[in-house]
Length: 573
Image (cartoon, rainbow, N blue to C red; front, side, top):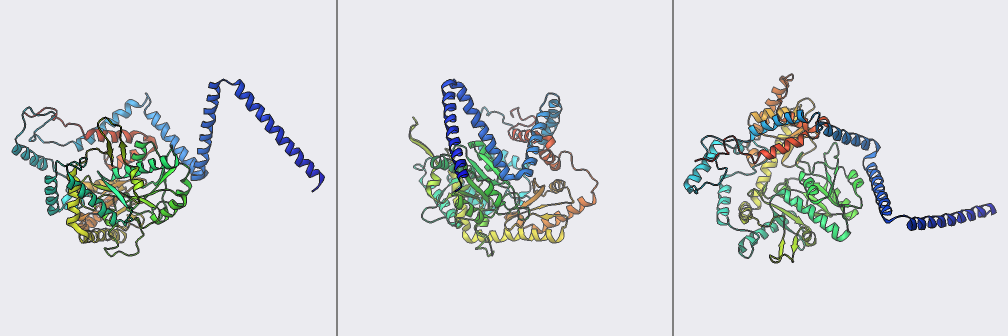
C-alpha cells in the first residue's frame, strides 16, 4: 500500500481518537455542570424530536412524498375548517343550522301516538299483565316497523320465519332468568354455550386439538376482544406499549372503536382500485415495531368483498404477527359456500396458515336471536389474553371471559336451539338461496342498468354499486320513499344490498324497482336533491369545509335515541 495512504489512514485514526476524547470531555462537562431539571428537559426534547422525525420518515415510506403531501393538506384543511366553524364568529350560525337538522332527525326518529300510554317514571301501582300485553300490541300496531317481513330492507333481519321465531321464543321463556355468569346455577346453559362455540369452530376448520373461543354479545364485542387479546399478548410477550393495528379502510368500524377504547393506533390501508381488496404491498409498508395485529375481512361490510386472506396470512407469518379475519357478516354464508356447490373459492378460515383469530356473527346468517356472536382463536394462549382475572377482589375470586359480567343465558340458548334446528343441510340450503339471489341481482345490474357499476367482484351475499352519472344518495332516498331500504356508503359514494332469506324471495322485485327508480332519476336530471336527505347528510360528512359538523349530527342522532317525544314526559293517569 502506498505510504501516503498509510499516512492518511493514520491521520484519520488519530482524528477519530481525538474526536471521541473531545466528545467524552464534552459529555462529562455537560453531566457535571447541567442541573438535573435541564437534563430532563433536554432528554424529553431529544425524544420528542426523535419520534417526530422517525414518524415523518415512516409516513414518507408508507405514502410516498406526493400522497403524504396530499394527506397532510387534507388533514390540515379539516383542522382549520373545524377551528373556524367552532370560532366565536361562526359558532352561533353553525349551531343554528345543526339544531335544525337535529330537529328533523328527531321528528323522523321519535314516533308516538295519542292512544299509547306514557311512562316517564314508574307507575305508582303496577299495570296488570293483560293491560301490559295490550299495550305491547298497540305499540306494535301504532308505531309500525319498516316492512322487513316483505324483504324490503338490506340485512337487519336475516331469517324472520314464524316457525323459527316460535322456537326462539320458547327457548327464551325456558331460560329467561339464566345468567352465564353463574354456570353452577345454570349448568345446562354452560353446556349449550360450549356446544355453540364448538360447532362454529368446526365450521371454520379450527385445529381440532387447540381451537377455542367464546360467545359474545355481537360482532362489535367480538372485534373488541380480538383486538384486546392482540394488545395484551403483544404487551406480555413483546413488551409493546404503543400498539398499532393494520386494517383495510373497509374494515368494520368496530376496529376503530377498539383502538379508541383500548388506546391503540389504527393504520388504515387503502384498497386495490380494481379488486377492492386491501393492497397487500401497502400492508407491508405499514408494518413497524409496534404492529400487533393484521386484519382482513371475509367479506367486508361496505362492498361485500373478501380480502386476500391467504396473502395476508403469508405476510403475518413472515413478520410473525397475528392475523384476525372478520367474518361477522360472512358468517354462515362463507363457511358453507363449498358445501353449497360453489367452486374456485379462496380460503378464508383457519386452513390459511397465519390466521390466528376469526369473528363470526351467529345472529346474522346463523339466524340466532340478536345479541349473539362467536370469537374464535387458533389456541388457548391467544384466548387467555382477552380474559380479565382478579384474584384480590374483596368480593371473591373474579374472572370474566368477555367484556360483560352478567350475560343473558336465554340468548345463547336461543342460538343453540336455532343452530341445532337448522342443521348443516338447512344452512347449505339458505346459502344457496341467498347467494343465488345476490348473484342474480349482480348480473341484472351488469346487463340491464348501465348507469350503475358493481364494485369489485362480490361473490357472497352483499352487492354494492356506484354510479358516475347519477346522484347515488338521491337514488337511495327515492328508493326509501317507495319502501325499499338499501345501505348508503361513502368514500366512494355507493349503495349496497345485503341479501337475506326474506329479500332473496323478492329479488326480481328489487331488480325491477331499482331499474325503474334509476330511469326516473335520469329523466329528472335537473331536479335538486332533498335538502335533508341522505345526499345532504353524506355531503356534509365528506366535505372538508364542514369538518366536525357530521360529528355533531351523529351525536344528535344518538341523543335522540333516549329522548322522550312531545307529551311523553307526562305520565298517563
